[in-house]
Amino acid sequence: MESYPFVSIIIPTIRGGEILERCLNSLARQSYPKASFEIILLPDHKLDIAPKEGLTIIPGFSYEHKRNEGAKVAKGDLLGFVDDDCTMPENWLVAAVPYFADPKVAVVGGAALPFLRDTFWYRAGGYVLSSLFSSGFASSRYKKRQAPYESQEYGLLTANNVVRKEAFSAVGGFDPNQPLSEENDLYFRMKQKGYKLLHAPEIFVWHRAKPLFMPLARKTMFYATGRGVFMLRKPSSIRPIFFFPTLFALGIALAPFAFWLFPWFRLPAALGFGAYIGLNIGNALLVFQKGERNPLAALAVFAATPLLHCTYGVGVLYGAYLFLRGQAGKGRNLWTSD
Image 1 (cartoon, rainbow, N blue to C red):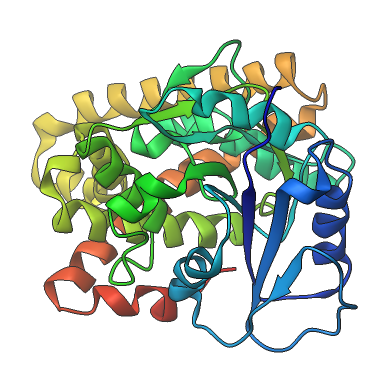
Image 2 (cartoon, helix red, strand yellow):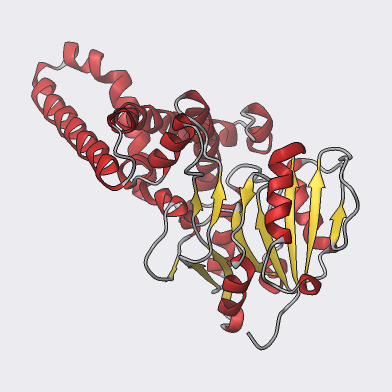
């Protein structure tokens, strides 16, 4: 690389300790020149961290304002956004920066991979997230692809991306009125401005997934609530596939009444349910074949998938409810998640 643009890495955090230290250590090991990047840490409160060259700590902002506040003081032309529980490979910045030679590229990101040495239930959570049948289009956030491609707003996440500051400022940064799915809203506005979002296989981080079962279901509800708000705030973002989990959840809830009231409904419902079970079995076997050859892992994915589909479906409805009640801005507090 002939030149090294200055990069400001912005990390909102609600914790300190070993997890955050692991994140900071991985950035300290970057092969990118140390003089060409800075780290801006935004904790809830003052952290007991020794001063380090290139590290700025700005405590006190609410979560939905942290990334914007970090961007305000950032010195770089590029902004790196990661979560505090991520670990970056040494070439993370070196691999990302060359993509910005194209002036239309606003965001370069990639997969958030699970820690393979984590406990079983955390690894199983990662298998569910990276499964197309379990997680839909969002699965691209959690697995590598073979080659770079232009992504849609749902294919990237703020746990792992580098953003052109000029594009970030052009769309007004993160919208504090969209405190859930805020990255989807940001990427959507960038796409509307004609910018490109790139998903690159070499731009990845290791990110601790939520474990099965309830922690991952809670996180899924959190994201789905944001999606429900986002779709009503930006109707042109709506895709029919986002409603499939909602239809599934409603089908599960209403099936007993439909069986009783409409006898003709029983056969097509049974066929549909059988098809779903068959697809879920195939999905679990695929995890067994391509991932961890552990029957318990396949069984866990089989059991978790309908739970996630139901919680996502309910979350979309809950997000729509918050929006219609004028409470969309309270979503992060009403259904908190780290």
